[in-house]
Image 1 (cartoon, rainbow, N blue to C red):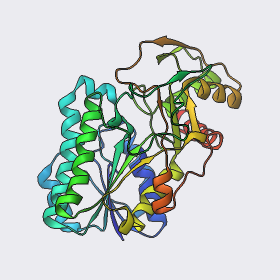
Image 2: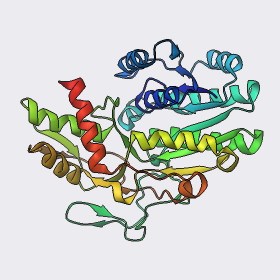
Image 3: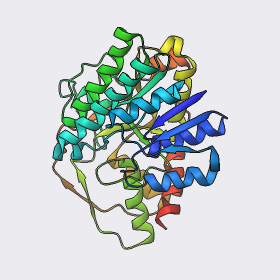
Image 4: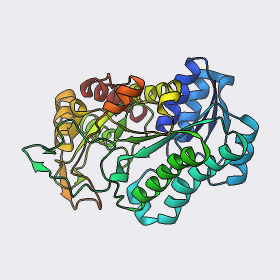
Length: 342
């Protein structure tokens, strides 16, 4: 099959491209190389796969270029992973956020409609489409918040109430992807992701919290570390999904498109792989024998006290569930972070 991976030099995209090439698939990568680490991921892919890496420097906001490339390639599957990924950036520059997330996704959808209507599109949406979840009861425990009415996590029927420009732009694209299936028959699938982590994620203060705090822990171990800030009290919870499990979501959903077309899936590590910031710090301290020194600042706007994905629909429809436990995944992530930091 011919796969087109947009944002193919980012964290998810580069790992997906690497796996697909290893599977023997034909892979075309689109990326504008604007994100920190994208050029390094492209170099890694070329080092691993040489001439099998087909790369085009194209921005999804360029409707003409996107349309021409999709008309030329007529890919079997598009993994739409290109996006503006930081909530803080969306607040500072909401127009950029909208043009990349909503506009870029629309450009891809319209190109499929016009030139390649049999193409499957798999869209990387976000749990932020559900907003801050303030209407759902959260209880504060010693190290985390819990949702007592949702012991297995939140499913796809959770009310949509996007909070922040980022949530709005992802929700707009999410809805367009669904509607292009309803109106035009495009084979589309939406994944509402919880937290994702692993190798080749060049995490920053604004995005990629697991990787970012892994970096802080390594600084405490190998260099002179200054206390770092956390937003809120550290008890907010996400379920964390390791990259090896993440890429299987895309491959299995495409393979089972007769079932998955037109559907939305909450995708995360599940309740067994859920972590609060405080619990992650404790895990990192145990693994590395360090002390995480931090101070609290105000909560981020629209932050969710808890989001844990209920993966049961994905398990039912395309037989997927996460296999990597959080201790194994965090240990592997620390190993990768160490290789590029030190």
